[in-house]
Image 1: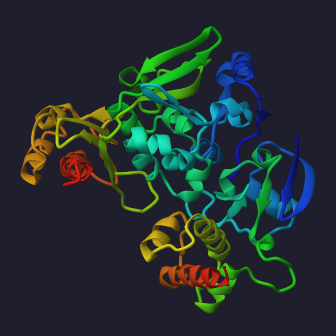
Image 2: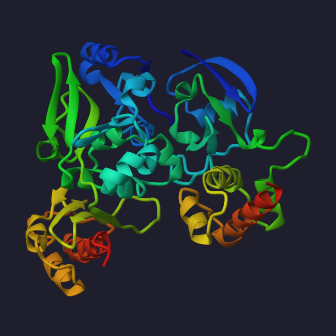
Length: 159
Length: 281
């Protein structure tokens, strides 16, 4: 077992974990943060995307021990509070109906937040390229792209 | 699936990492960004007893100007390589290829040195590194040595790095002012290329350097096309005629994505496109 200490969604946590434990397993099984989902388990689909020190990563492709000393933000910690508030990107996905079955949504939202952080005013093509590591098995890409563009507009209006 | 159990070591210096490697030998695997290694461990294609994580060695990260070369630390992420001003100014081809590696999330974790040491023939960084004549700085118990790109790639997933050695940095000779383009042909946006071509040209065209991805068990140079382009004028017809020789001497694989002769066809077409874009035609 290896000792890890990290910050997850604003809270400091420490644990002893097996080195082989994946970050996504740690989040779901040890911390109960099941908002982050496992899709393909092969680092293709992006459903498990979280932020590690502020940038998007696929949490099925990071060991929990590699996150020690770092800060993780999951879909559950994205909004300012847990009491029903939504992050502007979550709000945009709701507004534009950027989901069908919803399974890919947590990863899509986390990647969209990363994308807009790097490029606050993306073109449609830049959104499609920036989201290339996230797959939607319902093929609902059209509204997902609309959601990201809508979030860019509303965030821009706020700033 | 999750990996088979292993012991985890997190050295904070290259010396510590080398001594751990010396102690555990073939039982150990080096973990860089983990974006290739972790899938391998999860699918249980490999089951090392010890994993040595280089993530805590800060001296392996970063990019610097070293006179006639740009030096990229082995643990620098693809994301940081792509966006670095020194890379864009002096070795633009590397920036262009790094931008095409996998997807955004993978580029945040995956490392320049890790990808080159992994030596997947379908990896995006081998061909540009070969074309630019990169030099690989490898540390071992007896000190460091430098290996030229022509000698670095040995075979499928095999490089000149010894079992008891670590790739620490890659020196890439400056090609300031050269145009560059990485033309990647994929079936799915974030996947490995079926074939890709890394091209960089000086003027239009004094000199051309072209690397091929996934056209053999290692990255290859399209030497015949390079020779045909040297001193030629960058017209569409001229470049496409020179690109007809791009598949000479290649031995590409046949798989579900395409047969060998199809890949050779792709190499010719993509070389034409890559050179034309690099030359700004």
